[in-house]
Image (cartoon, rainbow, N blue to C red; front, side):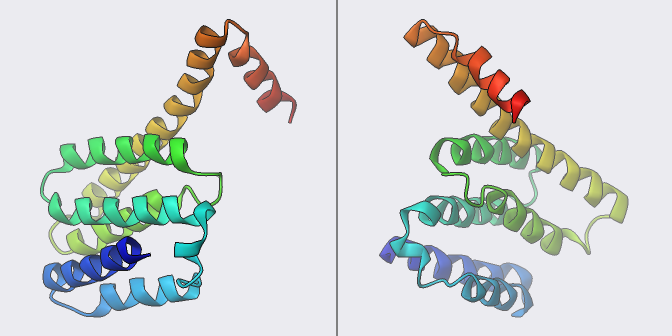
Length: 159
């Protein structure tokens, strides 16, 4: 609980310093309050994704000028979320950091460049998430000497 609230405060302070405005930190805080922020730290189901989202948002702020590093960060975050999430709100770990990225760069870049970067950031997150999903089946098949990959694909296809 302490880690969760500390990360929120640290992110809000950094957002205020980076944006020179209370608009983004206040918007994030209102959004978190509407997610029943007091339930998140006591729910193992939600805690992992929210912690990952907060850390990723801080990394976006720290690396706002290095888009190639941000691609790698979002790819890694997609992979980590796939590993830790219970299929609750995985997209949160992509959406909030990208919204922060848009907000801190909307005056510095043209709309077309910004949208291209946002699409690529989303693609990298999806690649990290999807490749980890497939690699879990492949590693499971190799270790257990079973056809886990084919069973998983058939389950996805049939449902």
